[in-house]
Image (cartoon, rainbow over all chains, first blue to last red; front, side, top):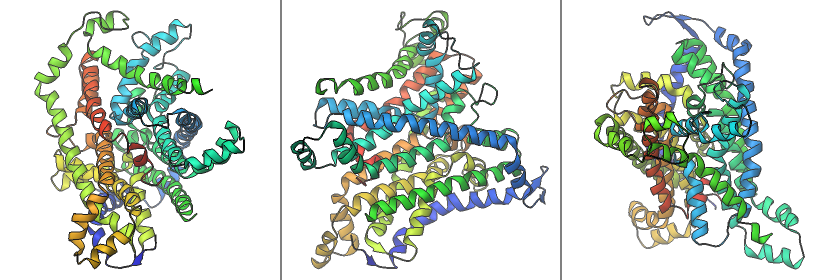
Length: 288
Length: 266
């Protein structure tokens, strides 16, 4: 759409700007303020310069959380994206009761408060009294997610797949139903196989929604806190301590405000960078 | 192949429903039954857990608190996002692309980063432990999201609609309220739904900003889980009840939900 140039548009934005600036600027400045100072309580602060940043960037603890975070994020992307696309392809295209059932039940996990998701999986996986835990143990696996690292990771990833695959399904589905029927008819006349229909018609048409899906999942899984915190509390040991769990431990648990603030900023910069890549990709898609 | 097409979605739906079933079935069991033996469905069906929740004011007030700040937040977010989304969809102005990007970064900011400064900010202005605090804090991610969704829907409305209205002698606000808003009603519905949903499911900020009077239901659950040992039945009942509001709203927007997740950009 061709837009008109109008500087008065800023007036329309004023309420949004005031609210978001209040919520974003003041806390951000607080964080920056802490990140360069040391405090011993009593509201006494001493200038520290960039010490905290150097400490964090060189600390093994931060490296380990970051590696765990990246492992988690890429694992769930590798499972959720192909699975989501496959389910969307198998969803009904005609309106009807079956479609309504699919849409409503698949949206359910997205609408449950995040700590309830955590509690639900916590109960569901308990080795003695949970359905999943009992099942796995009676099948002969030695499964106990509160004690064994591998089991904790398995449960964590299964929970995230349960929680968020629907987002990918719904996005891909929205992309699929936007494809005009004429494309499929043309493919039929050409005698195209199911695979080439997918490869040359459906996949290119889903490009935009899949970009949104991948990047939303990337960023949201980078921010994930409540679900793993309730499920495993970061344990056993530190084995499932992802970035934000580590950050909250540092800030609210140990009250090390300086290092926590420095870590927040580094964390935020990582997300900002991916956000910028996301935005550039989106805009390029829009121009096509 | 055509006959097996229903198989994958069916398996997936069963996988989705299993943990929910387990939670709901547990909510109808007594604590003794849960801890004592492994049963696939409640042997001694009991409503005790639900009765506890509906008779204890700390419990049912938790629901009231959650719903209060979620509703304030939803209405506030969408109301201020409407003119902003209109500006982004219709006009070019200095810094528009940068501004849109900046709004987006707030949607992506990790809540953990903001938890402590938010606590200090809202304590210092005396809003700590009120509905307003949580409602305002949640606008941080709900306003950008609403602007984003509404902008997507508004860009789909041809500009001729605006121009014709002006030629017919409509003032801007009259056009906006009488013609434009009814045209994008579906988009507004979707934006309301998403704002509701994200405010409903978020807990870290809601928990940080409240103590007693505005404590959300979901935070009460964490407290019960740790303080009173293993009242799993009660926990399950409270959890089951938090699923209901979402399930009710999603039914009404089911036909638009896919488009909404695509942020109006399919």
